[in-house]
Image (cartoon, rainbow, N blue to C red; front, side, top):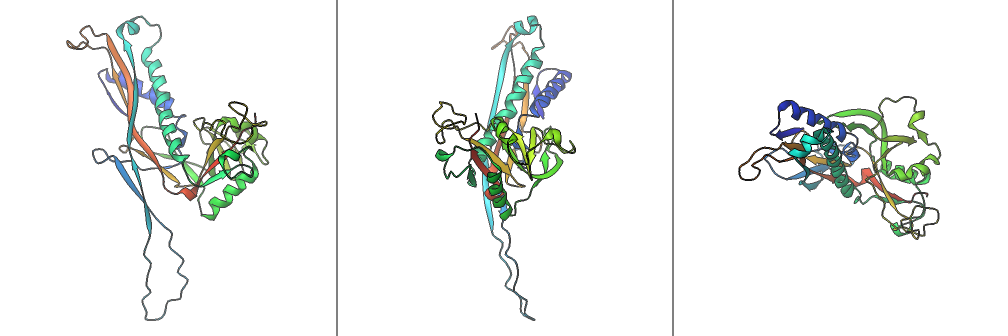
Length: 328
């Protein structure tokens, strides 16, 4: 994580470590995609190319005759970086009289805000995937009244497997550098916590407490069904009153069911794009400092963050967007 400030090196290092500590559990959707950083001082747009699978070469080769050969086909996906950030102002009076260490408190607050911001950005992009599945017999969001079920997962499994989507075997670890960690092979399902009640009712539901081993757990993981592992991300909020008649399902107004999106990923379904080869967040701390023009008595300070990021779906058919209701 890059830093910039006018405070001492020792204080700056301490602030950045607290920022990282709070950032780890919040950006769930950064864990399951590829990372395709844009180098500094190059551009704000990336083009990611995917070559399509070649057809099997089933024709025998004739002696002395050169085969025609294949012409690879590819698809390019473009993504443009946007910059995000926020800061908190504070005064010398608060620093001098407040009983708690303000730098720690403000760093914690911003350390939660930054990854949540990125996670919401990624969620908005990934929810727009076109490989959509509705619970029950619904064929549109307005017809959704059923919870997530084994039958719905079977449909998704069949669709992903037919496209030869590969189960996820590693995740991106939170930290100042890009690194991966191995996990048990599976399709990963990212859901809102309101699904927990319905997940526990599913056939073959196994909570993490009953796993044979805790090795390879995904942060935020709550359980598994077959070759699906479930991870909670409450940034996947419901479309309020978007479904059919609410009945016993959660509803904002009590009339129509709220419809919750959830995301299912195989390998290389999408990519996140930071700026540079390291983390895309920069922490900036400015203690009160005398300035004849703007702050002659050194009364104003601030701590903040800024960063560039985006995400792009690189294979719609290796991920799925599910939509289901949740039992009240």
